[in-house]
Length: 136
Ligand SMILES: [Zn+2]
Image (cartoon, rainbow, N blue to C red; front, side, top):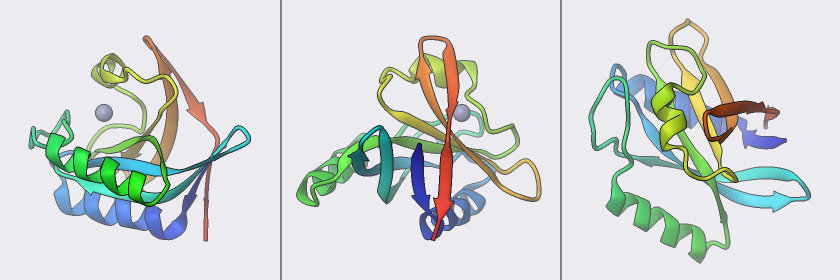
């Protein structure tokens, strides 16, 4: 199970809507508790591709975020990005670039009026939806 605070969910949605039609992206960090992942902090990073169908996290901002995680005793848990006009599931490219099978890959779809966020475990060309809990 992966847990996300409602306020962090709203932060992701607000940023992704602002960036659309460009894909928005960032990192997630928190703690591992048993088999669960608890997200304590969501980082918003620049998509250096400025593209509508793919993203690359800004390497400098990534380094700064990882330092911040270390300073705050947080574990890197994965990343998130938006799909402005496509469903909340990994594209072939998303799977190709998902090199870390222990990470969670969160994808926010804005194609419908209601935003849809899912979290995935990706290994090779297989992706599996994780149980995502969004709570206050
Ligand atoms: Zn994608």
